[in-house]
Image (cartoon, helix red, strand yellow):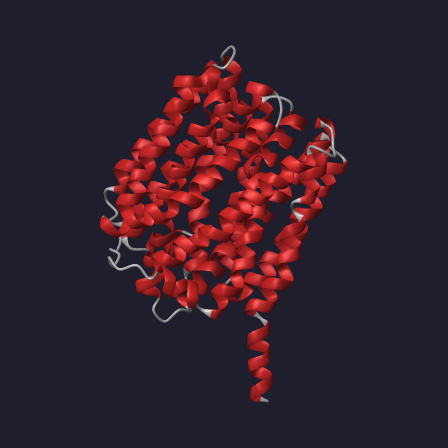
Length: 407
């Protein structure tokens, strides 16, 4: 891994350090932010509406963020995103006990922060890497993200357990803000590449690369899962079985160790040609481990889920993002249009997130509060398995047909 890291440019190394600081900070409070909101009303409705609001904010604001990136630069947009993340945590600190009355403002602030950050992040990945080495970069970046994540949840669990009431949460939110500010300072070392002032939004809508057009269904499906499942269902399911913040922190520390192992092995032994295979294995194992935890919500099932799910999720996320980036690069004019592709990506993804939240909210009409969590926990991962044949159709079938035509 370190041999590969040495081949990266100085700017790319600063970019990875910046994101490592950001990841550590958000890992301190990330999973506990959901628990904090849950403790305000002891139902899952507040979490669902929070997810809905930030998903809607992302969908609406991505165009504005892209305009800002053209007027300034993608990296400046990312830095403003860091500031909005700080503002989000300030809202949680100021309103704390009455945060349920300000959930709309919190969701919009977080959505703006994510939009601004991800505009810069996606363009940086496109500009600083190539399709050939992107998978390894994403895996190594994942390792750096996860190293901080090993310590952060355990530290957070200890801090929360040491204070009475909600004081521990406030300490975490302040610590998170400090690390986000440090990430902002390191980001000043990353200039990135400027964006042409002309927008090609409608050109991409009408004439994208063939692979990109087919990937719309994949992005929409991924949004359905991320809207509810990866946003708060995993945290709440593990919290319920683990029994308390300290145990949740210990669990997530173990899960992050498994993530590092997964990233290392995938970076060492896989390449771009393995993406579909890796995604398929990840989808099936993720579904099986989720179904086991849903049917048998006991400590042993949680341990198995904690061993398998971090590996599976890394396989799913990295492979899918690499394919999305490659579908952008299939456009011969992608350098001029890459920002427009990133904006348009948020349309099916954002729509999918809202569908996922509405699906979860609709399930409340058919299941009581005790049944809702385990049932929904086993339903959403099915979507990843259904995505496998679609990805095969997009990326493998054209190549096989081309070889058959040659014969």
